[in-house]
Amino acid sequence: MKIRYMLGIFIISCITGWGPFSLFPPSPPTASIGTSTWIKEEVRKIGLQAANINSSVLEMSLEAFLRARAHGMDAKQLLTIIDYTKPSTERRLWVIDLKQARVLFNTWVTHGKNSGTINATSFSNEPGSLKSSLGVFLTTGMPYVGGNGYSLRLQGLERGINDNAYQRDIVVHGAWYANHNVVKKYGFLGRSWGCLAVDEETVHPLINTIKDNTLVFVYYPDRNWLHHSSFLTG
Image (cartoon, rainbow, N blue to C red):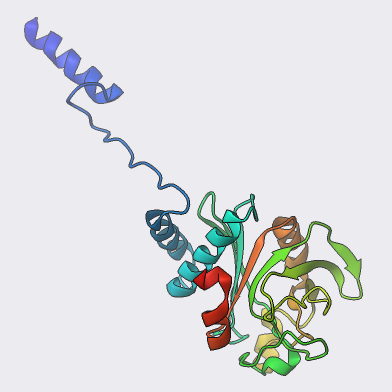
């Protein structure tokens, strides 16, 4: 009888986790947002879902996000990353839900006509340049229907780097020339006048996800930007 009693206690302990005998060790606590542990965990979890993302670019974008968040930006914890070190033949745009560490989108995106052909190598903040801009942007809250259909304006947050984006009408919009069929036919995506053009089938859900003050991080290893951006060095 005593043996049965002790066995019952052991089984209850294992099932409930009570006592010294637990088959289910407690889950490790979730790292607080903003800590180095949090960044490492985000990089690891996102990397498992998107093998084509550069971990160094991802880590840099997370650090920029945290600096923006410290100034009250992006309460939704959504981050869009564009990596212009990749050619237009590759899916180089990611939208990430940082609360859940989930990749929501990974798709093709254009660069500006005068930024390059297959690869974007030249960037500008100047109106009329027809080039892409680098750096950290904030999405606006009101999509609109314009000459390029359903679109979303961006506000450049970096003085001298992308702060003319709104004036230049640098927006997210859909385009027939921004999908994998164009890549198959021509060997590269079509090019915009500096806007972030994506596939027409993707543009509505993408814009509806990232609208309302979320961060967009557009990367290229430009020395001037890397050395002077307050989101990277401040």
